[in-house]
Length: 223
Picture 1: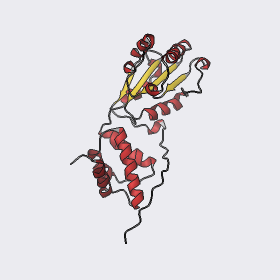
Picture 2: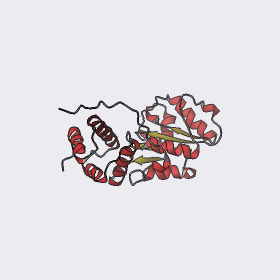
Picture 3: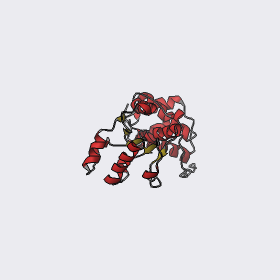
Picture 4: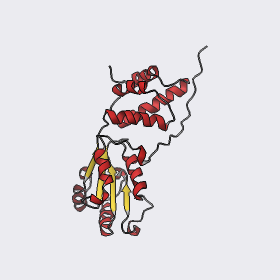
Protein backbone atom coordinates (compact mmCIF):
# COMPACT_ATOMS: atom_id res chain seq x y z
CA UNK A 1 0.00 0.00 0.00
CA UNK A 2 1.47 3.34 -1.03
CA UNK A 3 2.02 5.75 1.84
CA UNK A 4 -0.25 8.77 1.70
CA UNK A 5 1.49 12.03 0.83
CA UNK A 6 0.90 14.86 3.26
CA UNK A 7 -0.30 18.10 1.71
CA UNK A 8 2.05 20.79 3.04
CA UNK A 9 0.30 23.84 4.44
CA UNK A 10 1.56 27.15 3.11
CA UNK A 11 2.79 28.41 6.48
CA UNK A 12 4.61 31.74 6.47
CA UNK A 13 8.21 31.39 7.59
CA UNK A 14 9.49 34.24 9.75
CA UNK A 15 13.22 34.64 9.12
CA UNK A 16 15.43 36.27 11.73
CA UNK A 17 16.55 39.78 10.78
CA UNK A 18 18.79 40.28 13.82
CA UNK A 19 22.20 41.78 13.08
CA UNK A 20 23.80 38.84 14.91
CA UNK A 21 22.29 36.55 12.25
CA UNK A 22 23.65 38.54 9.33
CA UNK A 23 26.38 36.51 7.65
CA UNK A 24 29.41 38.60 6.68
CA UNK A 25 31.65 37.25 3.92
CA UNK A 26 33.71 38.59 1.03
CA UNK A 27 30.55 38.98 -1.06
CA UNK A 28 28.84 41.44 1.31
CA UNK A 29 31.67 42.86 3.43
CA UNK A 30 31.62 46.12 1.46
CA UNK A 31 27.96 46.74 2.32
CA UNK A 32 28.43 45.73 5.94
CA UNK A 33 31.39 48.10 6.28
CA UNK A 34 29.42 50.98 4.74
CA UNK A 35 26.66 50.66 7.33
CA UNK A 36 29.09 50.05 10.17
CA UNK A 37 30.68 53.45 9.48
CA UNK A 38 27.73 55.80 9.02
CA UNK A 39 29.66 58.75 10.46
CA UNK A 40 32.21 58.38 7.65
CA UNK A 41 29.74 58.60 4.77
CA UNK A 42 31.01 61.23 2.31
CA UNK A 43 27.47 62.59 1.92
CA UNK A 44 24.06 62.33 3.57
CA UNK A 45 22.91 59.49 1.28
CA UNK A 46 24.37 56.03 0.61
CA UNK A 47 23.16 52.97 -1.27
CA UNK A 48 23.41 49.21 -0.89
CA UNK A 49 22.88 47.47 -4.22
CA UNK A 50 22.34 43.78 -4.85
CA UNK A 51 20.19 41.22 -6.63
CA UNK A 52 16.81 40.13 -5.34
CA UNK A 53 17.13 38.05 -2.15
CA UNK A 54 20.79 39.01 -1.78
CA UNK A 55 20.37 40.00 1.88
CA UNK A 56 19.68 43.73 1.43
CA UNK A 57 16.52 43.61 3.54
CA UNK A 58 18.16 41.59 6.30
CA UNK A 59 21.06 44.01 6.50
CA UNK A 60 18.97 47.19 6.26
CA UNK A 61 16.38 46.02 8.81
CA UNK A 62 19.00 44.80 11.27
CA UNK A 63 20.95 48.03 10.83
CA UNK A 64 17.79 50.14 11.23
CA UNK A 65 17.12 48.45 14.57
CA UNK A 66 20.72 49.09 15.67
CA UNK A 67 20.73 52.83 14.83
CA UNK A 68 17.05 53.61 15.44
CA UNK A 69 16.25 54.34 11.80
CA UNK A 70 12.76 54.75 10.37
CA UNK A 71 11.59 53.27 7.07
CA UNK A 72 10.45 55.60 4.34
CA UNK A 73 6.90 54.93 3.19
CA UNK A 74 3.50 56.46 2.59
CA UNK A 75 3.09 57.24 6.29
CA UNK A 76 6.27 59.35 6.37
CA UNK A 77 5.79 63.10 5.92
CA UNK A 78 9.10 64.40 4.59
CA UNK A 79 8.75 67.88 6.09
CA UNK A 80 8.06 66.42 9.55
CA UNK A 81 11.23 64.35 9.78
CA UNK A 82 13.24 65.54 12.81
CA UNK A 83 16.81 66.79 12.55
CA UNK A 84 19.40 64.03 12.67
CA UNK A 85 16.98 61.33 11.52
CA UNK A 86 18.24 58.13 9.93
CA UNK A 87 15.94 56.87 7.17
CA UNK A 88 15.96 53.62 5.22
CA UNK A 89 14.34 53.59 1.77
CA UNK A 90 14.10 49.96 0.64
CA UNK A 91 13.79 48.99 -3.04
CA UNK A 92 13.92 52.65 -3.98
CA UNK A 93 14.38 51.84 -7.66
CA UNK A 94 10.98 50.12 -7.68
CA UNK A 95 9.07 52.44 -5.37
CA UNK A 96 7.46 54.46 -8.16
CA UNK A 97 8.29 57.75 -6.42
CA UNK A 98 8.05 60.67 -8.81
CA UNK A 99 11.21 62.63 -9.58
CA UNK A 100 10.13 65.84 -7.84
CA UNK A 101 9.26 64.06 -4.59
CA UNK A 102 12.52 62.14 -4.65
CA UNK A 103 14.48 65.33 -5.30
CA UNK A 104 12.67 67.06 -2.43
CA UNK A 105 13.53 64.12 -0.15
CA UNK A 106 17.23 64.44 -1.01
CA UNK A 107 17.26 68.18 -0.32
CA UNK A 108 15.32 67.92 2.93
CA UNK A 109 17.51 65.11 4.26
CA UNK A 110 20.56 67.29 3.69
CA UNK A 111 18.93 70.39 5.17
CA UNK A 112 18.05 68.71 8.48
CA UNK A 113 21.34 66.86 8.80
CA UNK A 114 19.76 63.44 8.41
CA UNK A 115 21.10 60.26 6.80
CA UNK A 116 19.35 58.23 4.10
CA UNK A 117 20.13 54.63 3.21
CA UNK A 118 18.80 53.42 -0.13
CA UNK A 119 18.58 49.77 -1.15
CA UNK A 120 18.00 48.77 -4.75
CA UNK A 121 18.80 46.22 -7.43
CA UNK A 122 20.32 48.86 -9.73
CA UNK A 123 22.97 51.47 -8.96
CA UNK A 124 21.23 54.86 -8.54
CA UNK A 125 23.10 56.35 -11.53
CA UNK A 126 21.40 53.71 -13.73
CA UNK A 127 17.83 54.57 -12.66
CA UNK A 128 15.43 55.84 -15.28
CA UNK A 129 14.82 59.41 -14.14
CA UNK A 130 13.98 62.46 -16.20
CA UNK A 131 14.78 65.32 -13.83
CA UNK A 132 18.36 66.47 -14.57
CA UNK A 133 19.00 67.75 -11.03
CA UNK A 134 17.89 64.42 -9.54
CA UNK A 135 20.01 62.52 -12.03
CA UNK A 136 23.08 64.47 -10.97
CA UNK A 137 22.29 63.80 -7.27
CA UNK A 138 21.94 60.08 -7.90
CA UNK A 139 25.30 59.99 -9.68
CA UNK A 140 27.09 61.19 -6.54
CA UNK A 141 25.73 58.55 -4.12
CA UNK A 142 28.37 56.20 -2.70
CA UNK A 143 27.40 52.61 -3.50
CA UNK A 144 28.28 49.31 -1.79
CA UNK A 145 27.51 46.22 -3.84
CA UNK A 146 26.44 42.83 -2.55
CA UNK A 147 27.87 40.22 -4.91
CA UNK A 148 26.74 36.68 -5.58
CA UNK A 149 27.48 34.41 -2.60
CA UNK A 150 30.84 32.71 -2.21
CA UNK A 151 31.17 29.17 -0.82
CA UNK A 152 31.44 30.35 2.77
CA UNK A 153 28.33 32.49 2.60
CA UNK A 154 26.40 29.91 0.59
CA UNK A 155 27.00 27.23 3.23
CA UNK A 156 26.04 29.47 6.14
CA UNK A 157 23.01 30.71 4.19
CA UNK A 158 21.80 27.14 3.72
CA UNK A 159 22.23 26.47 7.44
CA UNK A 160 20.36 29.66 8.34
CA UNK A 161 17.47 29.01 5.96
CA UNK A 162 17.03 25.48 7.28
CA UNK A 163 17.21 26.85 10.83
CA UNK A 164 14.56 29.50 10.05
CA UNK A 165 12.29 26.58 9.11
CA UNK A 166 13.27 24.69 12.28
CA UNK A 167 14.86 21.93 10.19
CA UNK A 168 17.86 19.96 11.41
CA UNK A 169 19.92 18.96 8.39
CA UNK A 170 23.16 16.97 8.64
CA UNK A 171 26.27 18.84 7.50
CA UNK A 172 27.05 16.02 5.07
CA UNK A 173 23.80 16.81 3.29
CA UNK A 174 24.64 20.52 3.17
CA UNK A 175 28.11 19.74 1.80
CA UNK A 176 26.46 17.56 -0.85
CA UNK A 177 24.10 20.38 -1.87
CA UNK A 178 26.69 23.15 -1.91
CA UNK A 179 28.57 22.41 -5.16
CA UNK A 180 25.43 21.32 -6.99
CA UNK A 181 23.09 24.24 -6.42
CA UNK A 182 22.68 27.34 -8.59
CA UNK A 183 24.88 30.01 -7.06
CA UNK A 184 22.45 32.81 -6.31
CA UNK A 185 20.57 33.92 -3.21
CA UNK A 186 17.20 33.55 -4.87
CA UNK A 187 17.96 30.02 -6.09
CA UNK A 188 19.12 28.90 -2.63
CA UNK A 189 15.96 30.26 -0.99
CA UNK A 190 13.72 28.59 -3.59
CA UNK A 191 15.62 25.29 -3.23
CA UNK A 192 15.28 25.20 0.56
CA UNK A 193 11.56 25.98 0.29
CA UNK A 194 11.01 23.22 -2.27
CA UNK A 195 13.10 20.68 -0.35
CA UNK A 196 11.17 21.43 2.83
CA UNK A 197 7.86 20.93 0.98
CA UNK A 198 9.05 17.60 -0.44
CA UNK A 199 10.16 16.37 2.98
CA UNK A 200 6.87 17.40 4.55
CA UNK A 201 4.75 15.91 1.77
CA UNK A 202 6.52 12.53 2.00
CA UNK A 203 7.04 12.67 5.79
CA UNK A 204 10.77 12.16 5.27
CA UNK A 205 13.91 13.57 6.79
CA UNK A 206 16.07 15.71 4.56
CA UNK A 207 18.77 13.35 3.32
CA UNK A 208 21.21 13.26 0.41
CA UNK A 209 18.71 11.13 -1.51
CA UNK A 210 15.92 13.65 -1.06
CA UNK A 211 18.27 16.53 -1.80
CA UNK A 212 19.34 14.79 -5.03
CA UNK A 213 15.70 14.37 -6.07
CA UNK A 214 15.09 18.06 -5.47
CA UNK A 215 18.25 19.06 -7.33
CA UNK A 216 17.36 16.80 -10.26
CA UNK A 217 13.87 18.30 -10.35
CA UNK A 218 15.36 21.81 -10.45
CA UNK A 219 18.09 20.91 -12.94
CA UNK A 220 21.01 21.00 -10.50
CA UNK A 221 24.65 21.10 -11.54
CA UNK A 222 26.07 17.78 -12.73
CA UNK A 223 28.96 16.43 -10.65
